Image (cartoon, rainbow, N blue to C red; front, side, top):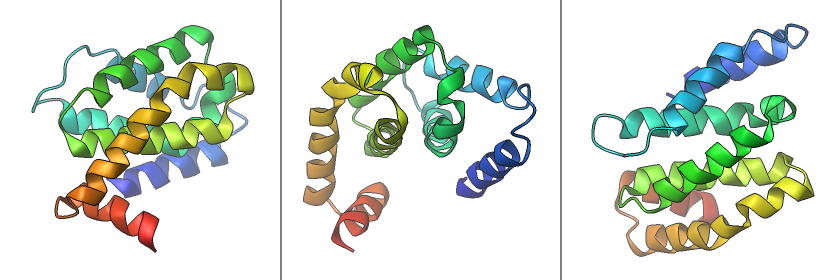
Length: 142
């Protein structure tokens, strides 16, 4: 899964002159993020979309209009209500990347998730046996 993100990121960088290169990817990502429920059938797709978003957000941010940012905020609210720690961890990683890139005006829209990220991290520390929790645990410890 991570190698797909590297390929996508490298294609975007290589094709920076072509505005159309990632329009399909952006459409796909936001079709995933507008799903209103999380279940076993779509949770892996959502996790993958979050991973891709975290890898290419810096390249696509200036192309996103306010309505897309609002859609992301709505999606993150749903994801943090999930009991799926993999999904919550991917969501936390995506928001961390978004915070690195966005302007101060848009940061205000994502501020509400800081507590959710801390809660997710705390839960990962409390139960480091789950696969995602081990990854997060080692990122913070090492």
